[in-house]
Image 1 (cartoon, rainbow, N blue to C red):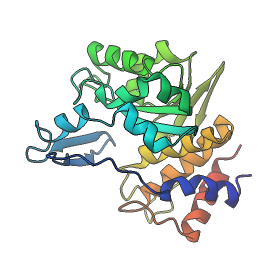
Image 2 (cartoon, rainbow, N blue to C red; image 1 turned 120 degrees about the vertical axis):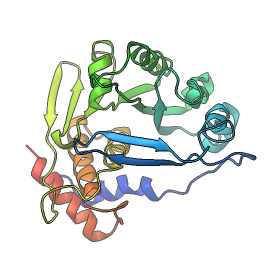
Image 3 (cartoon, rainbow, N blue to C red; image 1 turned 180 degrees about the horizontal axis):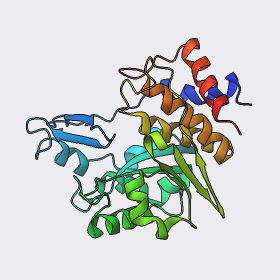
Image 4 (cartoon, rainbow, N blue to C red; image 1 turned 90 degrees about the vertical axis):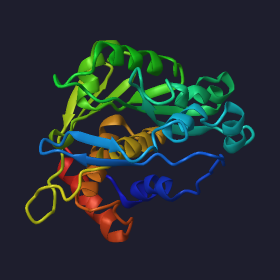
Length: 264
C-alpha cells in the first residue's frame, strides 16, 4: 500500500527551495507546445528566443561544475534528475550536461536519472544520427547514471544499447509505461482518468511529472515497480488539469486512488 507519508515525502521535492544562478544578456527560450490528435508532442519556437541570445546561448552557458558544487554544499550527497537534449543538432550540442561529467560532481551525486529528449521523424523513430547522439550523451554520464526514462520513440531507437546497463522506464502516454530492470520487463498501465469524458484535459507535462516522480522515489529506495505505479498515478492526475495540479490534500487523495487502481 502506498501511504500518505510516502506521497508527502516525494511531493516535498516539488516545493523545495530553488537555487538560481544568474546570467546576463540572455533571453528566456519560449515555445508553443501542444499534443496532436494522436498525443504526439508538437512545438515551435516563439520569436527569436531560440537564437544566439536565447536557447543557443543558454544551453552553451549552463552552470559550471564549480557553480553546481557550491549549490550542492560541502560534503553533501544529492539526487539529480535531468532533461537531456539528445538530438545531434540540439541547442548547446550536449553542453547542457557538461557539468555532470565532472568527476567531483559525479562523486557528490548519489542517484542520477535522465529523461532524454529528441523528436522522431515521420517513421516514428529517431534518425540514426540522433539515436547515436543520445547513446553517446547518456553514456557520458556513467557511472553516476542509474535510471533512464525515454519516450517510446527514443526507446525503440536505442533499446538494444541500454536494456542491461540501467533501469529503464519507457513513457508510452495513454498506453502506460514499460519498466525494465535485470531480466524483468513489465507494463504499468495508465490509470483511469476521473474527467467528465475520461479523456485528458491537458496531457502536457504528464510525462515529465512521471519521470520526476519516478526519480524522486527511486532515489529514496522505493522499488522500481512500486515507484512506477505511483509515478503513473501522478502523471494521470496531471492530465486531469489545465495546468500543474495544486498539491492539496484532495489531490494527494486522488493520487492515492489512481495508485490503488494500478496496484497488482
